[in-house]
Image 1 (cartoon, rainbow, N blue to C red):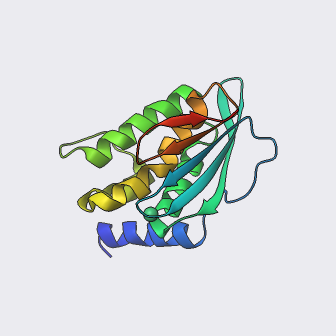
Image 2 (tube, rainbow, N blue to C red):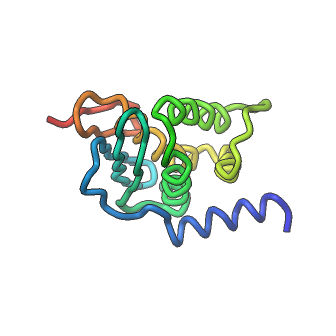
Length: 155
Ligand code: ZN
């Protein structure tokens, strides 16, 4: 099995059996992510305490790539400091649009392969945009649309 096959296995596995796919009643930050190009819709929920993301869960419905991405992301950010999660967001974002060498991202690397398919990049980054919207919003919840990149805080 080569690396690409391994990465595909990881995506399929997380797409079929997403981790942290549940409601988080104690959420302190939430965001809706919507990718109209593909129809992906995710609802990200975070529990942040003392600057640490203690829990990260999601629900919603989307394609295998957006689901796998949200699953891998929630695993990656759980237990992280908010600022470390923001660094990870930037590194992931850079890796998926860049052509040159970028920071190693561990298991998240399996999603970087989608940069060969520009229409799928928004599927892979949807959860990450929702993460940023949730963390940056002053309000308890926010909506992010990948179409406009605009964050719409909820009342
Ligand atoms: Zn999608």
